[in-house]
Each structure stands twice: as C-alpha cells, then as structure tokens.
Image: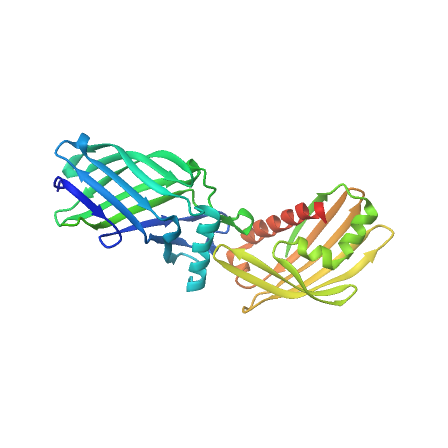
Length: 180
Length: 142
C-alpha cells in the first residue's frame, strides 16, 4: 500500500526503533546476539504526490539505547549485565554522539515501497545509507538498514583479548504504525 | 593441559627483571584484571583475576606461589591455583620464567575446568594466548 501524502511524525509511541547485533570470534559462544531498543527518537516523514518532494528525517538520543534481549550466550543476561552493556555503548561505542538521518532522495518502488537514500550521522561521521520503507494495508510501517560500524569509524566492541567480538554489520529496524 | 610459550622484551637489565618477576606485588597486576588480595609470605600471595566476557565476567580467586627459583640461571617457576568465584571451575597453571638482559621467556602449562573450559580447548588456547601476550606487553613497564 502506498503511503498517503501528508506530514507524519513518528516516535516511540508509534513505532519501535531497534538495533540488532550479532556476535563473532573464537569465543563467540560466550557472547550474546542483542536486541537493543532506542527509547528516545523522533522521525518526520513528508510524503508528496511527487516522490522527489518526499523527505524523511530522524534524530535519536545515543544515550537512550536499552538492551531488551540477549540470545545465544552460555547463560542468560540478567539486568546488571544489560546495564553493563548500555554503559559500554555510552562510554566506548557511541559516546553520546548525535544520531541524525536526513534523506537526499526518495523514489517509489513496487507496492508503494519508498526507496530512501540519505545521510546518517553517527559517532561524529556522516555517510550515505539506503533502505526501503514499506507500508502494509493495515498502516504498518517497516524499514531495515544495515550499518557497517567501521564505515562510521566505530571499532566494533571486542572482549576476551579479541576472541569475542560484535559483528561489524548491525541491523537498524523501524517497526510501527503510521499515525493517523 | 594447555602449554604455551611466549617471550617479552622490555630493555631492562637482567637483575632488574629478575627482581620484578619475583615481586608478586608488581607482577600480579601486570595480568589484565589481576590483583593481589593479600600477601601471605614473601613468596606467596592470595590473588584474584577478573576476566571480562563482554557483559559478563568471571572471577577466579586463589594463590600465586614462587615454588622454584634458581638465582644463578635466573629461572623461576610460579604455581597458580584458583577457583571460579560462584562456580565450579578451576584455573591452575605452572608458569616458568627465564630472565635475561632486556627481557625473558615464559612457559605456561595451564589446566582450566568448568564453564570456561566448556567453550572448547581452541577457545581456551586463544583466550590464554591473548591474556599472556597482553601480560608480556605490560611487562615492558614493570
């Protein structure tokens, strides 16, 4: 379903912004695949009849990431483990830097999909990124962008003397409902 | 049993390195996450090491003892006996040092049991190798 023209504002009340990370390295058995929710963010979507006039922007608070789930480890993560990960993200990975996305070009794809290209500022570096934004008949929105951390100058987290690593590519997803 | 050989270079005189290796108060903190809990004798200390595994960590607590020393050839063996805090695992090792002018050699024979060992011998070797390589770097400024 094509998204109807209009100005839309989205945030945590309408949609979930999630970061999914994977684990690698010789000791990956000790680590977890993480589902991390960004809890403070705001996006605007201006949909016009002419796709060239359609624009999308998003800002997120880098200190609002909360670990919701860790799977695949030797033992379950408890609340303290999750808080430790969030602290590590704040102190060693994103360091509270601004997260901003703004589109440069939007095209209509099949079935009303919007193919979005733009620039993402992350950890002090601005680089291009592209993703598809789809809307279902029930107004559900979804988009996934794959981000390679090193492209933004982020050194993927590692522990156990480099034998346990977060995989360089992480997935950023938006799932939610377009506000009426 | 895992056996590993490493060397270190720190440019310091042989006598200096010999004294440093035998001084557990200086040596133990050179292991990442390691600390002296209590000196129980001139040749022995209670110690612990906290190994970070991402969000989680494992702590091993036990003793480090100088069990052999040859002042003529500057060879010494340290025996490490430790148990996983809050777990069933053990990490024991005999660490033999040979000290020379400007550096030295380290032979480690380690036996790891419990949760850490359940990751497999390949992983244990990789982690132990990383730990000792990091240790040799820190010996540059001991």
